[in-house]
Each structure stands twice: as structure tokens, then as C-alpha cells.
Length: 352
Image 1 (tube, rainbow, N blue to C red):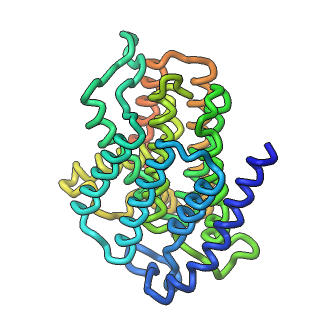
Image 2: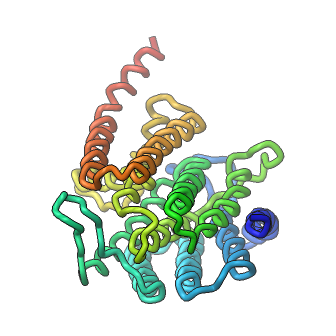
């Protein structure tokens, strides 16, 4: 236990050191986010949060963690996706280029980890759903979906980082409860490296006027890490938890992405077209401040993760957990569609 604590403290401290080292370099070379119509913040903000998190994770794992083929595959693919994110942060790559590289990364991860999503569990009360070879295609789609779900949700200070911590802690809890210790401390290492980023991003006492952003490099790294953990945890010979539980612990990014794609498709727009219709934007239009929006979304995410963990512990039938998730998602979409009525009502009251 002492050794594991040393690893986490090292990861935490090293993340701080990398942030301080990279911040002036980001300003010097122009790796910054400037305000625009869609991005409303003060000044040029260094986009080094994700890069700092990855470097701290990489060094911590290399220095202290058993380097199995699966872990090495994860680090290699994570490095590739971070490079893609840094280039995208700097040059704004096209959607097709990003998707092509994400597909390649997914294939390399499948090959290197020697695992892919093929068993979806007993979702329909008819026995386990096994996708066989189609599982490779399903895994590629899942990797792309998870990467972009966390990328899309990264819209207000602290949101992507806080949701990543919640998801990774949920994975850790499920691993501990199942007695599956193979990768148990890897999620905590990432949590330890994300914590300093959050302190700077949220301007916590002692970190004010030193804001940094995660950037596409960070959100894509988090998304790739989450789907890798879900894949190795649910598809192992002795899984840590069931595939349906994974839906609950990534519910908010997943639901936000699915809802936004549905809305854009109805309008005839590209699913990847940037807009201000995400969950956090809607909260703020209704009248919430960014911090209150963050708190409300995190509370919802905690409730969803708790339901998923309890469902796993109590071994609630998988078909029931899937049906319940779909019901919650339907209510989620309906609530978003009608929230504008609430917003208009509040605006009228405010101007009276």
C-alpha cells in the first residue's frame, strides 16, 4: 500500500512539474486558445493540460508499473492520440484526418492489447450476445465514440477533467469489488495527474491567473483511456464488471454526444459541426452560472455511476439495466427539448 501511495504522489507531483515547464513553452510557440464567438474567455490560454497529463502518466507508468504488452500497447496508442490532439490544437485538422487516425489507433490498440469488444452480455434475456468478428468493427466505433464524447463534453472549466476522474474512480471501485487487480492502480495514476490540471483550470486558491486548458490532446487522451479500461475490464477471461455497467459510468458524455448528434442530424448538419447546444450550454442558457452548471452535471453523473455500480454489485439483470438506461436517456432527450420553455419563462420573469 505504501508503494502504491508513492506512485500516486509521484504522478501528482510530476504532473505539477510538467505543467510549470510546459506553460511558457506553449505561450512561446503559440499553443494557446484565443477567444472567439464560440469560445468566451479572457486572453490566450495555454493548451497544455492534456499533454502534461499524458507525460506524467507515461513517466509514472514506465517508472513504476509492470510493463505488460497490454500496458505498452495502451501507452503507445495514448501517445499517438495525444500527438494527434496537439497537432489539432495547433493547426485545426479536418474531421476526416482525425477520424482516419482514430481508426488506425483503434486497430493498433486491438492488436496490441489482444482484446476487443465482442461479448455484450445477456442484454435481452436470451443469453450472452457475442458479436464474433463484427466485434472488431464495433470496437473501432466504440473507440471513436468514446474519444469524441469526451472531446465534445469539454466545454466549460473543469467538466471534462471532473467527469474523467469520476469515471476512472468508478472503474477503480469496480475492479476492487470484483477482485480484478491486474490494472487496478492505472486509473488512479491518471486521476492523480488530472488533479493538478483541474486546480489550474478551475483557478483553485493558489492557482488563480494561471489558467490552462486541456485541449483536444487531453480530452481525446481521456476518451481513449476510458474506452481501453472498459474494454480490458469487460472482455477479460475474468471480467471486472459487465458491459452494460460501462454505459452507466460514462453516461453523461455518452448521452450528451448521442443527443447532440441526433439534434444535428435532424437539422441536416454534420455530427462534428461545433455548436453551443451541449448540456453545459443549455444549463447556462437556463440561468445557471458555469460553476453551478458544472456542479449540476457532476451530480447527475455521480447518480448515474452509483446506479451502475449498485447494479453490478447487486447483480441486477443486464436486460433490466439496459432498459433502465434507455428510459433515462429518453427522459434526458425530452428534458433537453423542453428546457427552452423553462429558459424563456425565466427570461420573461427577469425582465419584468
